[in-house]
Length: 166
Ligand SMILES: [Zn+2]
Image: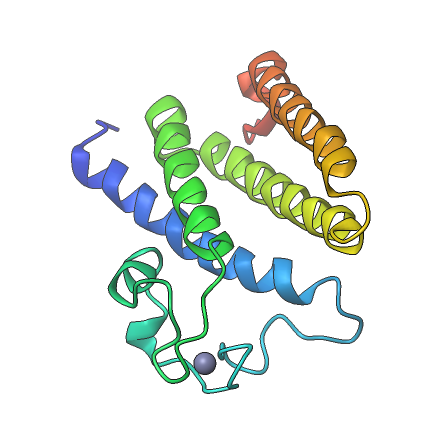
């Protein structure tokens, strides 16, 4: 299949949408008993449910200038960063693998790792933010780089057949 710009752009949009879902997973997964499906997305400050047009990956954050439409509380940069990261990763995976089973295999792999990395960062940084921020950040930053380097190395070393149907 020829890789047209349309396919690559579709892959990026698909990535951004999955990134948007990942943000919900990252937020709710560590909370015991919380569902990733219900309730619908809402502002964590004022609990106002989001309109669909306030929930468009990356674009809504830019249009709202990073603030809730109702209460003007700041929206975490995590949202546009995770959405943009998934859009880019999806774009490059499509450019590399084309529309194939390999693409979806690696896509799921990368999405899961991204969610794990962000959850990991939160749960180690937040409790220590008051006491030892410098030391914790000093350890976590190289660790997150190492995790990324390991991921890239793993992606390069995996044979392309790893996710093929045969
Ligand atoms: Zn609000």
